[in-house]
Image 1 (cartoon, rainbow, N blue to C red):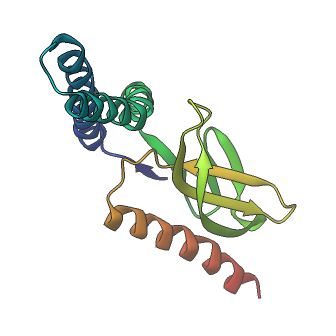
Image 2: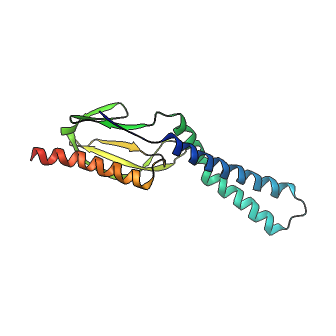
Image 3: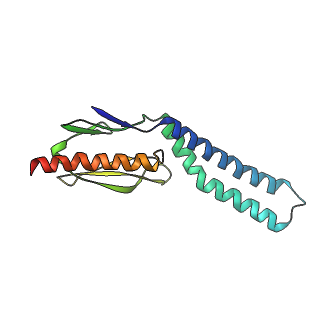
Length: 156
């Protein structure tokens, strides 16, 4: 059985970047609040920068914290079946795969991923959580498409 995983080192490095951005945002807010001699436009810029930084990178920090402790296996497959989130599907039941932007359920954050459709129109999502490089993302998508299309051509 071939297992497709993301690298924890990539998740950890992106976690550190998000953590740095959130800490920088907090520092900007504290500097703006603490400096009584700062001009109004400087305080506005510091507050805006701090809130934007926290607003954008805060949810990512929470998401990446979850990803660090999650099992890195995205899916596994062999010649007869594919297993996604411990849900086993026969290869003959698969219909197509698409690139999608999928909700994570964590603070309304959406992430890129793959949607695998079965012949009975069920959709199973494979979330990538922003921890794949563009090259890895393309390779996995190509492998999934080939996995499904090879089955279709063998049946026809």
